[in-house]
Image (cartoon, rainbow, N blue to C red):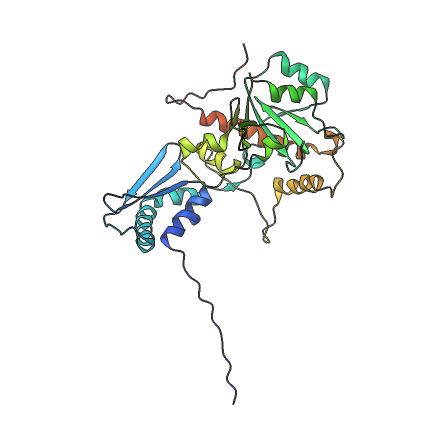
Length: 323
């Protein structure tokens, strides 16, 4: 007589700490900072669910200063936070998930070809003091495409076959009178592929990519939105700085987890930078829809910067003109 054995899979529910950190805060781009009070032995967590919205929770119980105490203390204070933040969590879960092109479909962006002589004549005639910059295909230098936003206008540049940027683009990148705003991850890939960086310690060879007039909204958001270890990304920054839109911007994926919509176009730029597709000969190689997809990243970067620069009276520091 033979016996058959069966195996069962046990699903472990996430701990309160995992729920708060990963299921909630990481998904929404909220800051979540834990700290143990050395004098009292209590644990505190500070969560930032929006602009200048810090919610701090502290345990009543005390915990020893070891791994077991840390695990228990974090679980206790996480449970408190999850209960108190139910309304904020429910609101974020209830808003529709959209992509940038859906949210800003009605924005009448003006797209200009960098290699049209009239483009830079117009730009330098009355140059802005701030521009939003984004790139596509930033694993190579220069990248596959460069987007520069000012007002509701975006300049698009496809570097020449020899890899050179236009003289006017180079001039813009060197101009200390114009603030360049990026939404870069912490690896600063957009800035590096454009040759931006200032060596701050020659002995160590370290490089600072955020020296004025270079601004990164990922770093700028740390004060009003709280510290995070991983970059929030442009979609979350738009969501958090423009709550009046009542949407949650995320990268759309199909049932297999593959990027779709505007993010499917990123794959084309990736193939070009990897040498698996021919370089763009010019903007005519991109459809108007593809150009708009790319332009929106630079435009939204600029808009988030404006939101982050709001003063205490809720007056936006709008993009000015050089006097």
